[in-house]
Image (tube, rainbow, N blue to C red):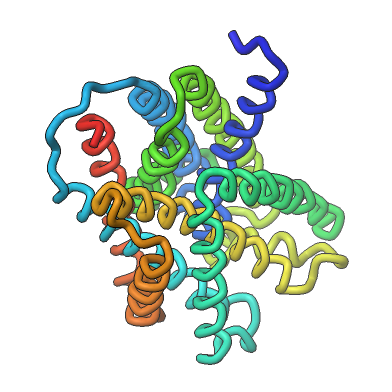
Length: 341
């Protein structure tokens, strides 16, 4: 039981941050829904709840130090940078959906640069920077979802939706698996970063906070999916490239595309900053006392930015790298934590 006021505040901060990190996958990669919105949400949320318990249990456990070598850390560093760059690339290349102005090469270039710069600025400052930005994003995400319900005042009525069981023939189950991995897999990276070098009492707080944040994610994302389904109906829901954007633009005071651009930017930055922080942890463990904090950030930033530009605009490649690098980062975080390198 969490007793002191300090521990309760820390629990709430970690829980809010866990919600933000998981929900960023929804805000950043607007839902495909895979032909069955409610079923996609059900499997994604259920896996998030189960996985969050496993992750919180594992990363709050103290393991005996073993000889794991440097190779896992090098791989973790590589995949973390690749994951951050693929997230930034996806964000920059998807801006054209909000307005034609954002599809210009200049806009895409600077969007990729500044989002990655912000991720490195936050990630280099470690957990404190991530917690501060995450709490700021939690208010933003929740308000963005809440105000989306005001679209019903414009639509005047809700649309009847089909039962998930009736849509089974149209359901893309491979897409559901892909979304589960995209949204949930890197929660292990999040847990690894927050538990790194922390005391046992704080790890126990984190152990309770991550499932709580995931439960809040399941509730808010479920409400958001139901809102989009009732607002757009089956046909428009699956034809819309961005159901969240469609819903928010139905509100007269929220017609500006900059609102969704800002939400996507926050989601991209929080995801990328955690990966960058993990990359810095790995780099410090690789070099130890030889680590140079003045040169390393510039080298990592250059590598990440070059990777982002290289894959930008190649949607298939970006999506593949996002999913595979998220899974690889999660697996390596489990291994490194178990070896207690």
